[in-house]
Length: 393
Image 1: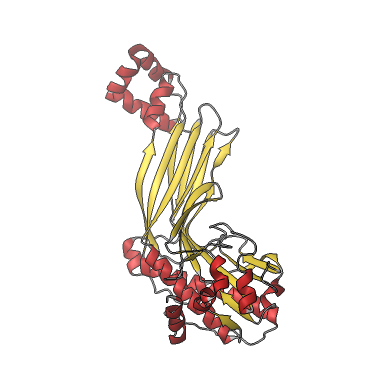
Image 2: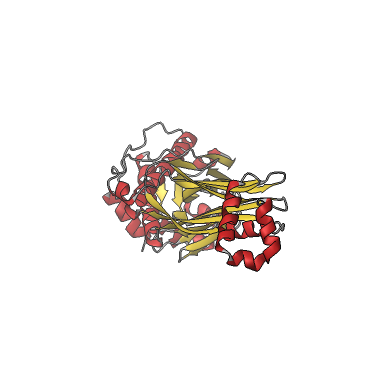
C-alpha cells in the first residue's frame, strides 16, 4: 500500500493575477475568496511545477493488524554475506577463532529529499523516525548473536577463544572497547541516517574494524592473535527499518520526487572482519566480509503514522499570482513505531543468518564438511547463556 502526497504550484489565471495587482498582496491574503481561489488555481495547474512523495508501508500495518499478525517463525533470515577484500584462507591460518564481542546497530531514522534547479522549481522531503527500539534491546540481540556464533562454531568443531578470554589477555588491550552505546551519523544513499550501535553487556562496543565506527588501525588485534594462536574476528551486524529511493537534484525537470517506506533489513553496512599475526608485530593477513546491498524481508513489525507535514502551496499560489516565482515545497515526517518483541525476533533471525553465512565461509576455508547445527535457540541454550554470562563478567 502506498500513500501519495502531491505538492503543486502554478501561475494562476489572468483574472486572479489582475485581482492581486489591483488590490495588492495584503488585500489578497486578507480576502478569503481570493486566497481560496489561489489555492484552487495552484492545484488545478499543478503540472507546471510539482513535488511528489510516495511512502510505501510494506512492513508497517495498522495497530489492529499488527496485534493479530502471525507469530514470527523460522530459524534465520538468509544473509548473502560475501568476501569484500582479503583472502578467505585467513580464517584457517590459526587453530582457533577469537571472537571480539559482537556489535549490533540499528538505524533510528531515514530521510530523503529531492529538488529541481529551475527558478520556479520544487523541493520535497520524506523523513522517517523509528520508535520502540532501545539500547537494551540491541544489547540483548548482541549477547544472543554472540552466543549463537560460539555455539555454531563449536558445533562444527572449531576451537573458540571467547570474548572474556580474549580481553583477559594483556595483548588485547589495544582493541578499543566503548562501554556505552554509540550514535553515528552516516550517509546512506542520498540521505543522512543516525545509527545506534550497542555491544554485549560489560563487553561494550568494539571499535576497531567496525565499518560504522572507523577501522582504527590495520594491525589492531595482531598481538592478541599471536599470543592466543587465534584468528581475531570482529562481527558487526547492522539493521535497518526503512528504505528510500529517488531524490537528488534534477537539472531540467519541473518535478521533484522521493520514495521511501518501511522494511526490516540487514543493512549493507554489516560486516565481519578477521585478521591473524604470526609474530605479533603486525597483521600478516586480513579478510572482510559484507553485503553488496541491504537484504530485507516483508514481515510486518511496525505501525506508521504521519507525524508532521509542511506545505507552502498557499504561499506559492499567492506569489505566482503576483508574478513572483517561488519554489514549491512539501515535507512529511512519519513515526514508525516498531513492536519491540517482533523487531527483536527479526533481529535474532538476522543474527543467526549472519552467523550462518560466516560459518559457511569458515567451513570452506578449513575444509570442514560436517553440517552446521540446524537450530540454535534465539533464547539461548544453556551453553550459550553461560558463554554470554562469562562474557559479561
